[in-house]
Image (cartoon, rainbow, N blue to C red; front, side):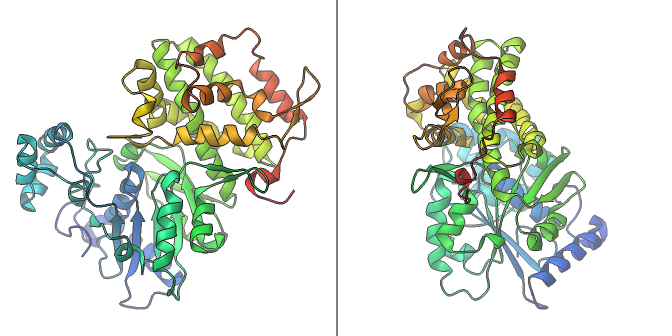
Length: 465
């Protein structure tokens, strides 16, 4: 059994197909099962790996949509065991539960309410995997989800999974999938992997290039790239679960991206498909870089609209410049990149992190995994993009000095963020000093340079020149 089949789902329908319009959902499920060669009575096994906000919401959306068909599909989520919930979070959780009558009734019916009372009083310590079973993600406790089937043993979770959803941060993806590869050595069938991770690493040998989470998974497991996809878009996890209208793209080989787009699509969550996997994945990591700086500017200027717009002009011009290095047809990425950047600046965790650093409520010594928020992937992305674009083997012609320079020299915001977050030469106020530098070029000029010069470097994405 997956989750609970007795409770009302988040979208307000009881778990039976007649009351939920389940006929259409069951048809989609049957289509995907057929493509995967599932026989009658052979359950389609979907498992999420990693239980951050987006990974948990993704699993909960699948559970809400398809969990009723428990004889045909099993939906589970893996997270590490042992993570405790501090008393302050337990108190907030108790308030959330008592503010939502539907959640309160559900917990009472499942005989699960008392432990939250005890945790609030300090008489019990809750575990993150324990509360996830009840529909509470530790990184998003104010948005209750449906009950989930949680597994804390990685081998048990993945060894026979047909579809694996990677909800891990990019910084953890390689390590976890290297472990998973040991459990797949005896597999006959090849799983499909859908990665939700937005982050990158830089590799400098044999030539400098970006390594994305899907590439990490490919190298760790040996699963062909045709069976690995990326799903991302301009969205906030809690808002998607609360049925705010959103869209996303699933990118990868046509064989799987089109049926998966249909399988995942909901009235409030439109999923398009695209063949350009790695470039979309990289763009998902790039916007996190500049979101941190946006948060700093917002905090340091007390939400000055003028200052934020100045920053936005410079950061978008740098992102456009970088996309011209990475993509042969960068104009096709402009809309998705700007949309993803916009929502991240408005409400994303990376912008929030920049604000907290500038306010002094967080400091860099606390690391980039923050309680209640999860991994701040923009920090490692700043380091990766700087290392990549400053490498001695790369150069572009400087428009004024008329000599070759490293691409990073035309990205002053990226350079400043690197000095703040990585080398720690500057305080957060350094971002304002960079914006107010009288020698800073008009951002329009940077865009013109990118558009009028042959900057495209396919090797940066690990492709042949």
